[in-house]
Image (cartoon, rainbow, N blue to C red; front, top):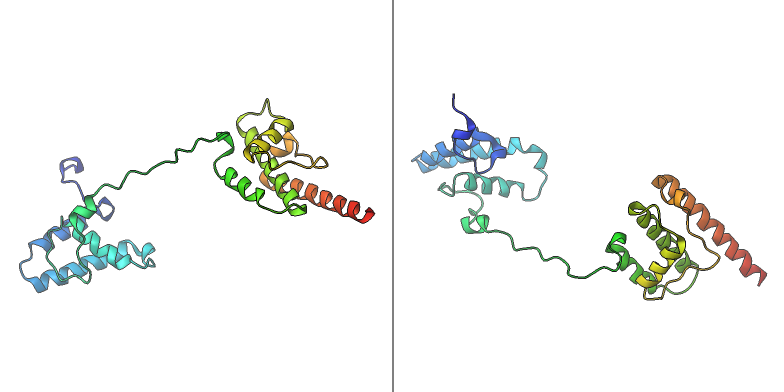
Length: 211
């Protein structure tokens, strides 16, 4: 019995050893016309094996590229697409540069800083007040995911001010969700926040009418 560990490694294992053997046979065919026909047959088999990806716009091109790669770029055929270059396929991708920006509060995540920067640009009014409240509640929830023992609203609001360079503050009549609400399931939490936002909006309307 021949074990896989003693066989040659496969260029693209997903196609299986039989496809690799078929391509090796195709390389050995001396008649060009027959070699072209055999290559087309192999690609049809490869197409059936990857039927779930058939809707991809470059699906056919990839199949022919895989054919050349599996052949070790030794298959001389009249393909509908130019053969890929070996040095381009084997070239290692460039090293991904990571952001060197230091975060004042890493536990809140990077994206919240961008959201806060955008919120600072919003004109004063009910919409901005609601957004500031939503951001503050998000900060509290994020804080609680890693430290459930020492969080308080004053700390969260101070962090909000620090992250916005002192430009965002929660109105005195607003209050953050409780710890239990912040740790509740997302659907329930959304309902709680929505109810509080509606109540605050109605209270603001009543105040404006009295004026």
